[in-house]
Amino acid sequence: MGRTKKYIECTKKGKEKAVRPTKRKAQQKKRAVKEVQRTFKMLKEVWLDIGIERTDTHKGITIKALLDSSAIGIFMDRKTAAKHGFRLQKLERLVRVKNVDGTYNSRGAIMHEVEVNVYYKSYVEK
Image (tube, rainbow, N blue to C red):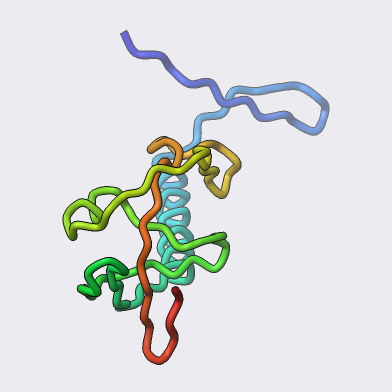
């Protein structure tokens, strides 16, 4: 048994009347929201080809990196680190990660770090 949603609209005299939005208005709103999300996504995501070099073996790889101007560090997914043989070093204290909306990240805290040199064009981060 499905629930029906009730939409209430207040009239000028303070009386309420039930209103149900039309399908067309709902579809227009969905399209507008998707367009805003698509535009926001295009403006926010910048992907770069960067080089990462292991400090222990000096072997390097080229990967795609997401540039995030609000990040406070350089981060790598655990699967990527394992796939390319980076040696994980356990952190003394866990780093809890918050999303932009203030909620904690569902993938959990950062527990390890790796030592790498990061290369982008003529820039090097050690």
